[in-house]
Length: 309
Image (cartoon, rainbow, N blue to C red; front, side, top):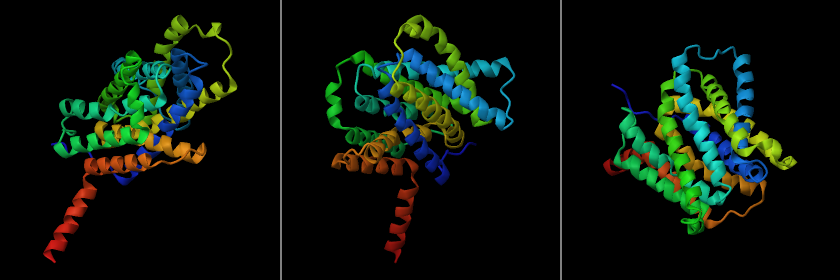
């Protein structure tokens, strides 16, 4: 009988690191998407990450899957994890603010906890877990800024695109668990290669990048940062945490991404840390503590000992 998946201290550290890498992606996309159209930017993101990961795989002596059935399954994962979400988010961010996109992207854990409940045997929904996810989502909304919600209803298709991308990420987290016996780098490079092949004809047919002006140096630098840091390196961590901690625990990164984005803005761009940021972070921390369970169990044990004394 399978046991409930939990997060170790190292898993939490990897999740925090991943949130920093993916939090930076909002900056990269914001700088690049005006000069590089969505399908072309998604293609570049996958292709750059694939080249980086292929070098990593070869250096470490890993080999790619050999059977067609595995590649077909990887193609489904690539569609859920790269083709659909990358293009939906990039297109959505051409019409709505990155703040609202961040809030909508934080719905991924809400989708994940429902999907995992019905699709797995070791990630069942519980009342505390569901409550913790809701608290974490509220914290993300408060921290990013409730004012961003004023734009809800404007550019509805773009907003639905971001929500659909979050749903795809939730599905990919559950589906991707079937590859937990493969090295994370092998799974990552495989889906990036497949994603590049999927996006290439779309970029050529829809964006026609050869007819566009040369992107600015800032856009090109952001494109490479997006591919190398927020995709290549991030996906090495992604599949490692997913295999060890499960889909729902992994999707909690969606709550940590806004935290990382805010702290990056404060530390790198000199932005002001506001009271709503602290309140939102506190709510996210509370939500994560409820989901993890161990801090609350430790408090109960301490409270029980104090009563006995």
